Amino acid sequence: MDTILVVDDEANYRTVMEALLTDAGYETLTAGSGAEALKTAAQTDLDLVLTDMKMPRMSGIELLSELKRLHPEVPVVLMTAYGTVEKAVEAMKKGAFDYILKPFKNEEILVTLAKALEHRHLLLQNRLLARDLEGRYGLPNIVGDSRAMQEIMALARRVAASKATVLVSGESGTGKELIARAIHQLSPRADRPFISVNCAALTETLLESELFGHERGAFTHAVAMRKGRFELADGGTLFMDEVAEMSPALQVKLLRVLQEMEFERVGGNRTIKVDVRVVAATNRILKEEVEAGRFREDLFYRLNVVHLGLPPLRERPEDIPALAAHFIRKYAQENVRGEVRITPEAMKALVSYPWPGNVRELENVMERAVILCAGNVITPQDLPGEFAAAPGEPALDVDRLIPLNTPLTEALEQIEEQMIRRALALSNNVQVRAAEMLGITKSLLQYKLKKYQLTG
Image: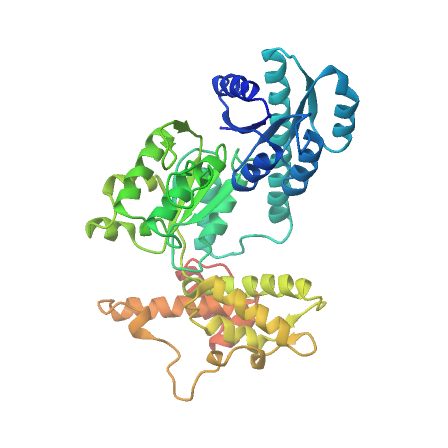
């Protein structure tokens, strides 16, 4: 719902315009002076300002200049009498969208305001599209050649074209928001907003206000109306990170929005309808949260229409070389380092590391290495101290990686497959080099490749 601020020192005009615009479906605010208008503009999400030209203390042109300084993207339409048309033309040169002569017909002003709002929406869409295109065609957002990541991206492409709600699960740092953005960019909503909110970062009261917005006076410090994330994401995608952290009361309200696509702002009684595609994410196992009574079962099924489970980085070591190269290029460019390369020994240390912080940790390590490396070559000495194994330390944490009830033959096969995957990644899929790393013959390696259905 678009919000219009009407500014006029005559109360009758404000009353008439408020009734007209409200009946036309706009949310309408009023101000009796330029100073009052600026105060409202500073505290409220506005889509358009309709102001009288001639007002005491601060004229419409003076108000226009201040509004353009504060909110250059918000269109301003001026109302003026016939005798001040020249002033109105001057105002358009200073950034006004249009002007309307008093007295005016209702149809005339509604058409003008609709054009101004359409212009604003196109500007916002172009800005979003430019940002998304930069992300899509600049450095790739998602890197991963492993079978698991290829399957996830294939599913993301299929679900993107639909309106289905998506649940993305995975440990912290696995790239859940990147997947959500990819789904948005691949969808018909790509030119509409992508809005995100972290449900774990806010208290229950603040989160409710962030999601649904609030009316003026809804609570202490609510000095003006604010639109929530659902309203801002109308027509686009809302990414809700750490959705399992929501309180039971908010879970009920979220369920209603997902079912009906409507809600009321905090402190309000007007129902607002939206068209939003929700992608939710969690680092918890929601089924277990449901069984423990901490998460509503009906909400779980509403969110879990399509599920994408992101594997931790330690389970796809073959993706580490490509990810490392991607982050090296990114931070070499940002720090104007020219081309930076990494030695095989340093890459081996990266592939052997368990990565408890997942892709986010790898990115931080690569940024540090690019900044600290000498001669634009990353060596093991440029990596943090934990990458140097202590003498006598076991190379494999069996208790953590392999469940206790796993049969020995199956556990050995899991280890063998991961070692082969790592060797292939380090050798760039050159079988002779991979076999040498593993200490086996090329023919035995080829037998193992067929056994585990790997490509070399």
